[in-house]
Image 1 (cartoon, rainbow, N blue to C red):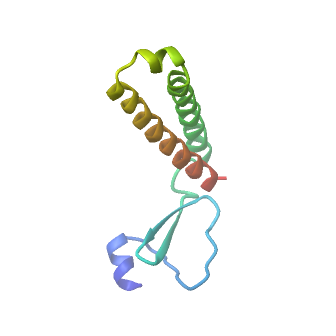
Image 2: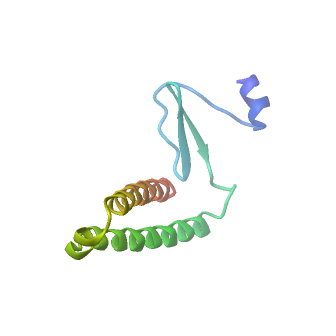
Length: 109
């Protein structure tokens, strides 16, 4: 713990087996260890929730636009295969970002 305290420059650290994730915290898994960082007091949680909400709206709009293209029979019939493949990749990327952003927002609730 002293080593981690020095590396992370934190004043308090706790550890154990079967610890529940604190509210308003982010989590990361390193090898087989789950690390939690409580954000309360470090950032303005309301502002961060609003920022993530806006980002989710933007990503949902972008995802809808890409989905409309991919569901448009004229687009599929007239576009080159590489363009369609690029749109499918873009859809997967935006969908992943959306899911991760929703998870971040859920972690702050």
